[in-house]
Image (tube, rainbow, N blue to C red; front, side, top):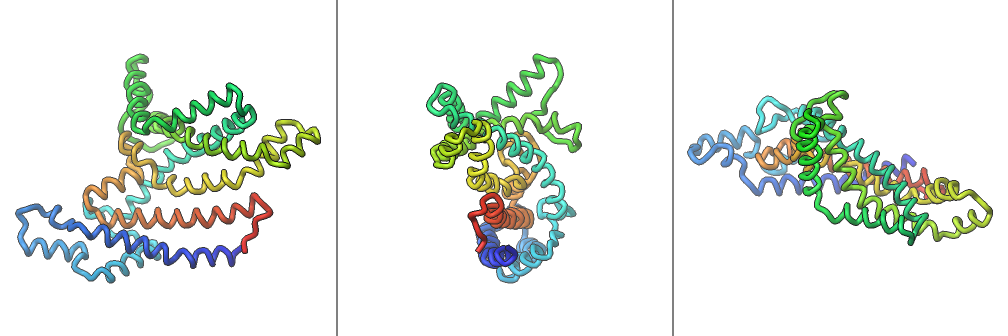
Length: 317
């Protein structure tokens, strides 16, 4: 297994290096110095600012400095938009806030979606199945932004008017376990409602395919209880596509949901990254993207490993 992991890491190193280089090249298509100095800046100010940012160096030297900071986990470069605040400090504060939103949403969505998909597959073709599929398609068809607007209006503004006290926050965030329901529960519920439509449709297709497999027919012919057939035999054999979908989602747990963080004012990874892109804050964009790209590659490798864990027929060769 270790040989497989090392081989996959070696194969993905050129991919990771290419992602970082492409990011640097695309960012430098714009000149951030002009926007930060304004129209009245002198040529001396312009040259001095480029030197301060390190943009006067050749692209390969800038690339080498960035790679060194990434592979040594040294994110001590200061933000261009917030002098005195390092990229590492932004990462340490933004990641927990994104995780507080995305981890509960993923857990709740996965559990409910798998259960609903199994129920829909069991009653395939009946009114229960049609109703569940209709709800899933409805969740997929309506825009994420619409759910956010309706959630804020009815789940926070109107609910506060009806009860006479604020129940959910529309904008802002304060850390702490006791503060989590007030600031995070509403965006988590919105995320669950939106994601359940996509996940239920996917898991239902997997479950329906499994119900037609020979081992299911054999288990039923032997008189196995229906609960055992569904929750033991079928669920175990359907773990490969389930693991694939969950593992692909894992990197996005750290990056957070840009829409939810933007509209609810949650200063997580998505919110900070979007703000950095708007303000041409290259160190923050490069640092956050480097972390995200690394997590995405690691999740792909972990997916291959989990295949062998859940399915003995898979061998890491």
